[in-house]
Length: 246
Image 1 (cartoon, rainbow, N blue to C red):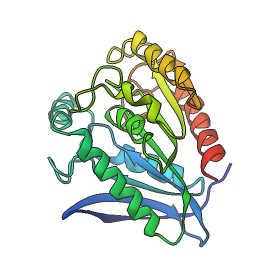
Image 2 (cartoon, rainbow, N blue to C red):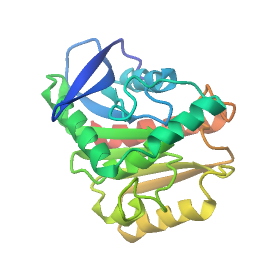
Image 3 (tube, one colour):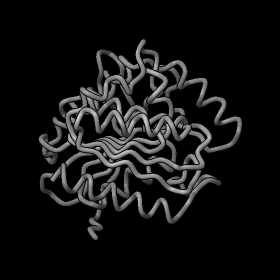
């Protein structure tokens, strides 16, 4: 398994007068690499999201996590308490799909300016709210592979858009892997079955992985962390990126 030396920094991504805070991790050695956009949960670009960013970078990718709440709560970075969750939900409800997509596109444009990024290979990974956004981001032509972890509301919400995100499945250009916990009370099983049916119907290159686990099973800072499920899912993520971004 690759475990390259990395360097990290905080950067700002310009987007029409808005400056989006972002955390970037990349191989320390020169070369050209595939790139990955990490999309946060409702808790901001917190220590878990920064850790995921670094873990992927150690596999030989340029990885960036933009602050998706920049417009409503700049600098938001919290843990997993009940209060944190309420605040995060509040901010999430203020996000709008067109602005989210604009911020993701600005992030991709930023990546393409970096000399060590192979522009032909850009992926996305997101968790919870970010899992939904990653599925949406998969409709962008630049995204060759997207990993969506327990993306809530894909079948029922359009993140402020009129139509649920699932209705945009036919627009997906690259490969999508979706990860769900069968004990996840936030995402009923019939919803992830609907998502799988849509991916099949539109002949999208996909994988749907279900674990005997709860919402947030990939995050080792949450009570719902499931080390077995997380380890298996991680292998699938690496395979997804290796097959589509290199």
